[in-house]
Amino acid sequence: MPEVTAYAPGYPTWAELVTPDVRASQKFYTELFGWYVYTLAGDLNDYSIFTLGGVQGPEVAGMQPLADASMEPTWTCYFRTDDMRATLDTVRAMGGHELSEPTDLSNLGRMAHCADPEGADFALWAPYDFQGAGVVDEPSAMCWMELASHDVEEARRFYGAVFGWTAVDRDYLAPGYTNWKVGEWSVAGMVPLEEWWPAHFEPHWIPYFWVADCDAIAARAAELGAVVHIPPTDIKPGRFAVMTDPCGARLAVLTPAAGSRLTFRPHG
Image (cartoon, rainbow, N blue to C red; front, side, top):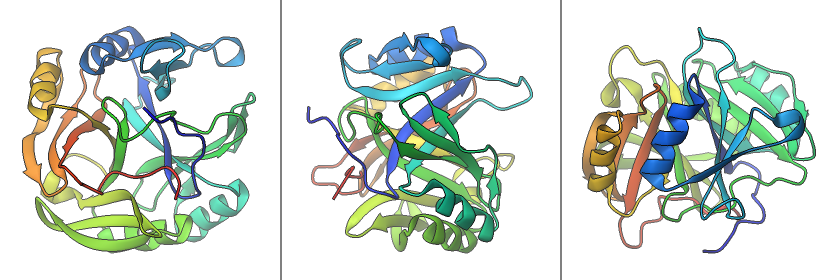
């Protein structure tokens, strides 16, 4: 599989699970996707890395323990920036919030947590030695990121300003899907929250992971304790399912249709 060596600004770069039960999450994801997991040494010794093919394999996602029991388990979606301060200034100017000060993570890169005007959280990543996921758009790897929002037009304005994304209307499952693009390449999507998710869910981002057989993975996830909110369903880009893992973090899986361009390319 070709490994990713760089990401352009505005592209998804990383997905990070924050969980109240690291052991339970390790068991779920290693059994579901066949991932290997190891823990970083040094200053980041509570941080785990999921890989494909063992400790030397390409990185696919991260995991850390939930710091505050009052917080919800979540998958945090990271996006590349080449100017952390300017991007944070735009986040605030457009009505978003800086949830954490920019922080250097050893020699890996610089990150900051943010929230959009509706409260959906995401993260910014300015790399040093670590670019992000070492493989995307491959089986068991990240292939898409998607926002669920109450206010679609406000979200289009916000993310268009922050990342320079162009919004394109699509009909995926139901009218109202937003496909965000950088140049000619799709990088992320958005759904109207009330049409796709239970009423009590707040605006949020989720990652999608590429799977060879959506039906088999959804069934296996349920066996492992996940709650499947949207069962395997055909849409133009492929067949997908949306679920909450056993610890409460939301994610989706996708088996892309032949020739689909919904998934993103890391640079282009």
